Length: 122
Image 1 (cartoon, rainbow, N blue to C red):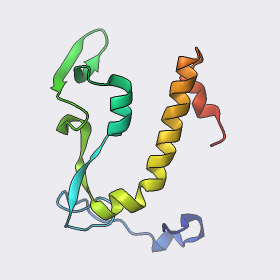
Image 2 (image 1 turned 60 degrees about the vertical axis):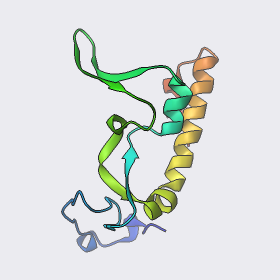
Image 3 (image 1 turned 120 degrees about the vertical axis):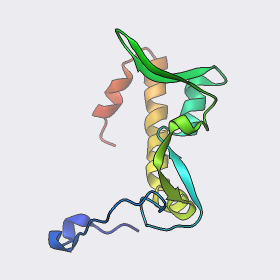
Image 4 (image 1 turned 90 degrees about the horizontal axis):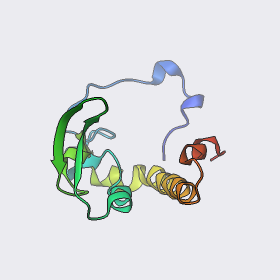
């Protein structure tokens, strides 16, 4: 799947210029879509059908925009990803995030600090 970077000669690693019309992982130009900044399933689990806004909240409220739902463009990265990378290359990370999110929700619902999930070995 991915090369073991610890076994590679650092001089063999190359960088490429970011091209917004290409997949940010493999460079493909076909079947591109926007990747969520936060998984749509996590957004739905947290907010359900409630109205959402995105912005900066603190002493002042800045740049507030309505978010129409979990698939809103406001919740996507500008960089694109191809269908193959989105389903194959990122699948293990998506599943691990799902486990992480579930553990954090369980801790929160049990009255524990969900930040403690970061202390777990996995």
